[in-house]
Image (cartoon, rainbow, N blue to C red; front, side, top):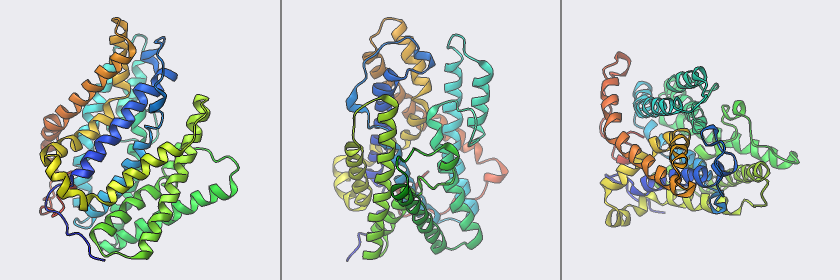
Length: 374
């Protein structure tokens, strides 16, 4: 089967999907989770949940698929130092800016534990995987970093693209086996603990699925690999079933997993067809706009939850209805994210390149431009 050639421009479908994932997570928190389990800044605020937004957490699972897709391509073009440098310059500026913004806003909450906020801020800017979290959304960072560490280690040991690919395949197979064991022997599978998440057992299937989709869309096609992608997709869907069951139990709801599974699979199709969709996307969405919202996705995800709760609390205290306040803060969060990606992130990134360990020359421009910064 013929394969589409690698594009010379950004893959707009990936950028737009990233934004859609972040929007789903924001909608889930503001429209569903906050009204049912208000965070401390919103204590005493009464709001009705929007039940149609309960599935928005599945955007995180799609983030992991996108990460696997992007990282495999990144690893193919860089040695260990270049790979680590790219990851540091991509992650650190947004985390430092968003964690600091969140900490400053949390300090305005009456009765807040200053020590706890300070501890959470230090853990965030130092990328401590287990500890006090300044924002509930940061749990995914630790999982991403473990995955990056695995890839960097394989590059360092072998310096061979094929070994990175094999390592990701093994990760996917082990993670798939984990979920198969859960399906076969656990009467009521529980959502994994933080410590277990750091082993990549629960989420390895997502990273591996993204990597397989990258391979299928840019390398040689094989029915064996396509079949393995279906097996990985089953593992991903089973994780979504477990998480949906956990959400239903925690919020005492009668809901099934079919909607988040359908949304997830639709996103997977977009990832799989991203290369083929590029000509049509380029005609409908200007590449610069798609790239801009794609780069803003990361700070939007990092800043919306705890900081957003504080600002929503300010607005509701001033008499603004919760629904309107949450929509206003959603727009403010997006505006902040666009500003962050356009101004302070590049400024801080440029200064980080002056650090001795980060002075490794950047690799030549990748033919797949969507890998920039990602």
